[in-house]
Image: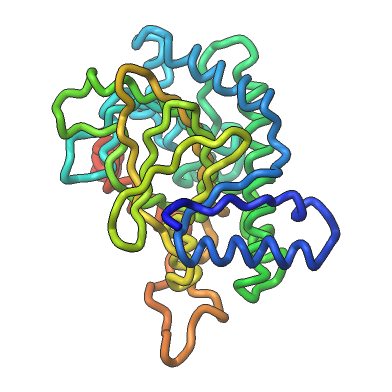
Length: 322
């Protein structure tokens, strides 16, 4: 079948070990074959999703000068608003036809990591919209909990301790992002896409998308298939960091967004990424004499910073100044 699997994760919120094994097997199969799947039966309510989407629409509807008060290019820890064409995911194409808002784990200015100047660590930079900050900070925590539930299920197939990822996701550098894709007619050229073909950087991504559509996933034959919005689901995909951890047992699949015709598109990906000092090295059960580790050992922060430099011109400029 040329459609992504839909997995009901309701059993992951029970104590039925056999049901856990069944869901874990479905997720393992999807991660091996596609690197993409849908989940339903999660605890994030439709009311929460609507509230967050409503706030995102209100934020992006503001005047550019208002949004640029939290300009991400003026942030050393990659938080705030990214204007249209700030990001270039496919280096062979023009910069992306989208604008963004990024937030992460809020660490106050006096936190030891912030005082030490560690990369990607610091306070969130929220817009001055009523109810925004409390809603988004709660949603971030709830999405992190959902991501860790999925990661916990993956440990069964990967042959590691059930709390392996929980230990490594304390004070994570996970990112909650809001994206607005303007209609295709606003593109600077016929080649400009909403988001050029790319793989994600982190461990797992959980995507909530509105009804506009436009997400396309590359299948094993190299053809792009649509991943349409399905009510009540998240689209989940494996990122490059998990591919390295699993020695490519789990596939980090290229995907893109084609901006819709005649309408705006809003999406909310959550990029689950561990503590920045976490070692990313091949898991014991994912290597053997005939299948040795393919990637050198790195840390979460080192890997993410190298990928950010490839994608954002302002990050390259900041690195050059250091």
